[in-house]
Image (tube, rainbow, N blue to C red):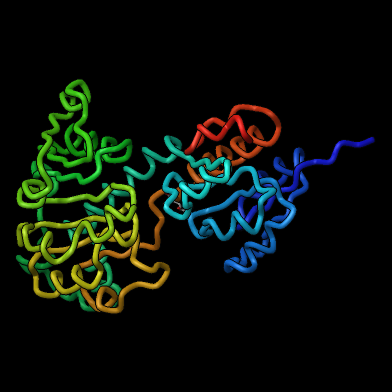
Length: 330
Ligand code: 8YV
């Protein structure tokens, strides 16, 4: 009698090689047309599936899990997992996995690039040139603020935050100040000269502030009008973490009134929609959630999500579980 293979859903289009690899182990229901599945379609497509390969766009909550009690594991192709209701996973013994580490350096490169583009007004200047408005040099044309030697502020000092701090301290001679739920051990602070501070001090002292903290109810609108009001008028703010950490309407008002100099945003509240006030402003660099988007890193993320799915459903040890305590029930 042939053994029945587990069935899995690959919720979004991914590398054909990843799907082919999953087909070696599973009956795969994939989504090559990359249709975004609303909750009813997601629930329906998960029927009969033991596993799922998801991205940040699929919300997996109690309703989805209860409608699919056969589901044993959901593997996110992302390090962030605010699209998962982890207590609901825990309560039902469903394993959740993510893709840490493989995207750290790539995401840090992008965060630094976005901060530099923001400080040096690169996209604003490019739009000016493309509009055909460049007809002479002038002493103050697109003057921005220096990155080298400026104070780099980091809110959320996890793996990506530390990778950005290394770039700033070692490559650009930036004093680094940070705030995080927990302070780094001295051995991690010392090589980059990172100084731990309370959030108010961080906001007051940073010349370039980068947000690299996970989204949760606690970090919702961690940067709003009051926080922006503490920042230097010459400061920049860069968000590569998650939409919702910044109050986008308050940020747009602060940028419009030049209460801070500029912002770089890769993530937005309610993305892919972008607040219309932000779209109208010149002093904000806007990118469509691409911080991890290099070919090699997206491939590594897909491979790691697939490794997790295969291990979880074939008796192996998933490399990067979020809630390992449920593993024995998987
Ligand atoms: C993903 C991300 O591209 O890993 C994360 O948390 O934000 C990005 O790298 C996105 O979440 C799609 O899954």
